[in-house]
Image (cartoon, rainbow, N blue to C red):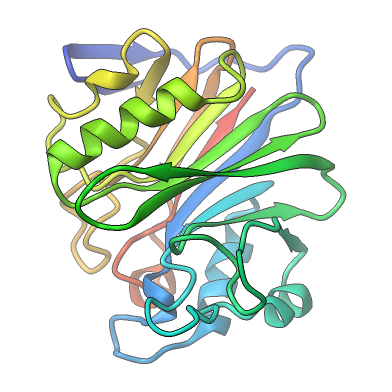
Length: 244
């Protein structure tokens, strides 16, 4: 078992064996537009890290460049060649793989349906991306704003617009350094979990990458990928969670 913190105090996660329902491994990774700590942009290296996660669904942040037409930092053709993932169709153009840098990869063979975009308030342009799997699980990928006031507004919008109030995983770079504040909008609807410290990759001191589960879902296990390749590929380490 392990301990994490909800904004209003500690709670305990009891690890249990799944009975009857499928367990998905959900991962999240801020890929920093594929630029590693050595200054090189290396999408192949990022995809190597993703492949090592053995995930069913991966939400990505900073998956597209910020300027111009926002071309993909991880080209779609390369993803198809080097991984077993499909890119969820969320882009609004023909050169990005996501929206506001947020993208979702789903392992081939896992059926999914509707994909959505949720516009978020705040001083910076931000958005959340949503996909629903055919068996009823909904994934929301986020990269929240740098200001806590913006993050609170963004989480309030997400909680109000979550398409599946019973089986939803909210996951991504939440940009919140504090373990006791900032997530008030999720209380009552979601249970917040922090797999571990994921930033900075060279010396992890902050749990910026987290997930929140609606109450029909169970966290079986969670962690941070801390291998040598992950410590060089981006400034964030990937996080993962097994969810039933």
